[in-house]
Image (cartoon, rainbow, N blue to C red; front, side, top):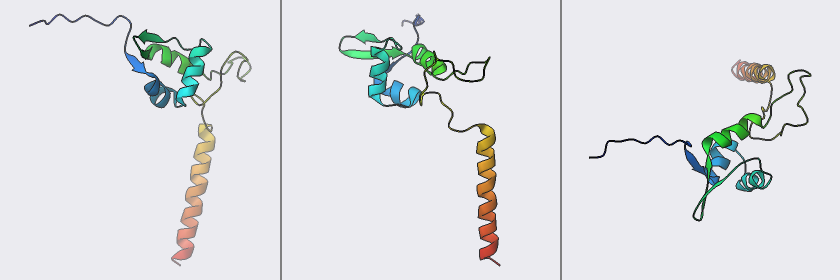
Length: 112
């Protein structure tokens, strides 16, 4: 009957739990701390606190951005699990191949 679609000008909303688990990969208390520090704006709908996905993604993007001039993280960036890379890709590849060679060696020694 009503086929008029009104686009949501603000974007999609998510809960604290979704922001913490899916996007930021941190504890819900960390999301609360980001809100208290003014890093993550919240939207209140009655008793429910929601976040815009765009705001959460902005926080993820700025969580660990290295300074391109010096190559080191600048003092104004936040470091945390939200965006930090555990190991450089080259080191991950080296570890993978070292484990693969060790497993292959053990396999050959056991079957010889």
